[in-house]
Length: 373
Image (cartoon, rainbow, N blue to C red):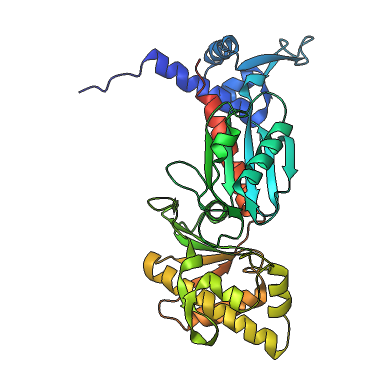
């Protein structure tokens, strides 16, 4: 039986997609260059350009090739229209709220940031997020992608407040706050999941691992077959409440270890990273003893991760998790545990925002290509 031939509309749509992606890659092209990049005939390229110009997605840039006197006909350069729009990459963290507007070429065309304080009530963070979004003036972006330093409800995109959370107090809906600023969808996930995606992109050879974040807060992401496992409600990886060995071998939740060791910020459950690094690194028996205590406590979480998720390895990141001395102590403890996973330091700087930015750009490009024509 002969397979049905694709419809003319389908062929045209596929050609238009190739033309748009060629212009995304190269910014400006003549119709002859478009034909080469899209791997279609010159007449087909010309027809596609004409359709896209009529749809308002492509414009004649006004620039011309040097033609005449034996150099061939003058050619017009075409580029994407302003209708391609922008996307926002947004980060909500104890360090502050930051938003970048990026165009379809991946260039930053606007940036705003502000402090929210810590710990921060949800209404204050909402006000700061709204203020930052308001500073990115101009045409509303097609979409926004958000990283938040708190658990995120998978169904609603709302930030979930858990007892003892070091940053947000109360619940916050970033999509609701951004709705009046953003023309299209708002995608929200927590910062550790985004960090794991950044590491996944940087490690194409390994697509099943755990990402352990050790900073002011504690977090974990499980990557399996190239996908971050978010859990039924989006709360997978909340290791702060795993029971582990505290000082003196006492069984307590992991987050409580830092209170007993005097490593919390005043009036907060957030870990005092500066104090921890000052006390747990360098020579001397006290620093070594503190490193061992921290490694034993975190090692309990690693045992649970290895037992339940069976990762190929564990990527350790965060302001103190990636310190060589602490990572070394953690590796020593982990090696003595059954089914000990190998540990690797995180490699991507500012990983959550890097992943959010990459995701926003990919979504923007896909939305431009899929725009009604």
